[in-house]
Length: 223
Ligand SMILES: C[S@@+](CC[C@H](N)C(=O)[O-])C[C@H]1O[C@@H](n2cnc3c(N)ncnc32)[C@H](O)[C@@H]1O
Image (cartoon, rainbow, N blue to C red; front, side, top):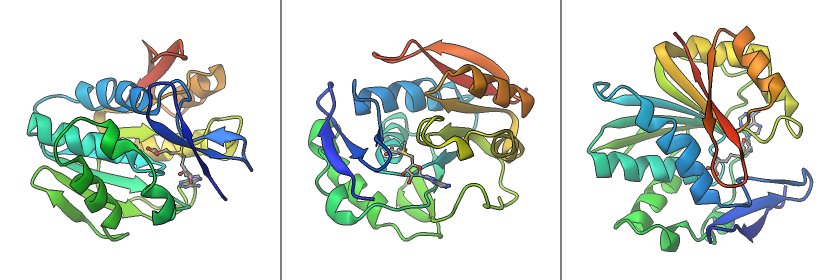
C-alpha cells in the first residue's frame, strides 16, 4: 500500500489509500473525528473510578487515537493502559510527515508522538507516568486475546463496505468477550448491518450524534 497524505477540513492530516479508495479518517476533520468518537464519546464515558483504564484499539494506523488518548491521560491525570492491534504498520517516513504535532496545542505532543511510534511492538512500553502502550502486529481475525479484560474498545477499522471481513459477528463476539461487564465499544459507523451484528454479538446499542459530516455514531455496551 502506498498511502498519500491529505489535508482534512479541520486542517489536520489523514492518509488516503488509492488501492482501497479509502481514507484513514473523516475528510471533514481527522482530529475532530477522533476526538469526538474515541475520546469524548468513548474514553470520557468510562466510569471515572476505573484506574487504570484498559483500552483496546482496532487499527493503530497513524497513531492519532493513541496520541489523543495519551494527551488526555496526561491532562486528566488518568492512568491508561493502551493496546492497539495493527496488521500493516506504516513506514516511519510517512508518519513523520503528518502534521499532528504542529496541529495539536498541548505541550510535549512531539515527544509523545515519537515515544508512541518508537515504542517496540509486542511488549508494553511506558510512554509517560500516565500512558502505557502495547502495539500488537497481528491480524484481528486470528488474534487470540489474553485474559486481560478491557474497559473500552476503539473500533477503528476501515469502513464496512471497504473491509467487511472485520465488521462481522465473530469479530464483535471476540471483542465482547474481551470487555469487562459494563465495558464499551465505540465506532464511527452507524450502518444498519453494523448495529444488527453488534446486537447479535451481545451488545446494547446507543446512537450518539456524530462529528461534522456524520449524523450518528455508535456506542455499544456490554451490560
Ligand atoms: C481506519 S485505519 C485506523 C486509523 C487509526 N486508528 C488512526 O488513528 O490513524 C484502519 C487500520 O486497520 C488496519 N487493519 C486492517 N486490517 C486489519 C486486521 N485484519 N487486523 C488488524 N488491523 C488491521 C489497517 O492497516 C489500518 O491501519
